[in-house]
View 1 (cartoon, rainbow, N blue to C red):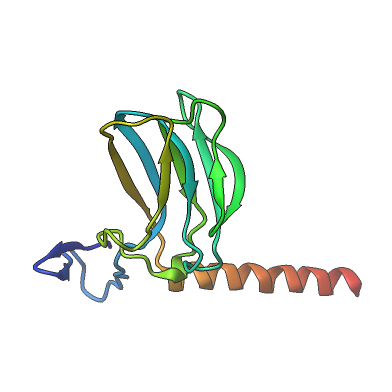
View 2 (cartoon, rainbow, N blue to C red):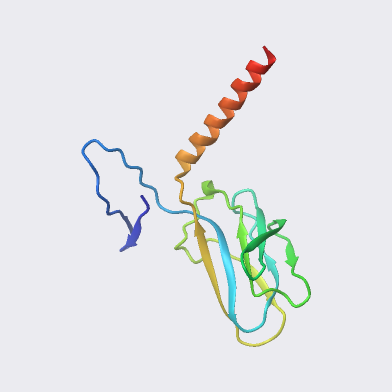
Length: 155
């Protein structure tokens, strides 16, 4: 179950049955969508170095969906092709970084634009739908299973 923020508190509302276990976890940002609503296109992006491992996946819009373009490292300026882009997506923020999607300064991004003028744009957080402890447990279970298969194959 994911919360709603009311008066700076995580608020959960849900139905349960007797003895039914429910996992609650606040959302964490694992990426962001950037989109220019009006004004010049985005010419370059500079991502933070101090979030998780500082490595990110960049996706570009192909008029239908976001397509993986390249891996980029925070702290370096990434320049888009001539003419820039009007939208892009950044993924790869580890859930363990615990980025609060409602914190407007959690993921400071540097942008340049293809021309002067007034820009109207959005930065929309992409949130994790899997609680970190559950994801970690699934990952660990998978590794244990692979280890068991490898050991069995060697026998």
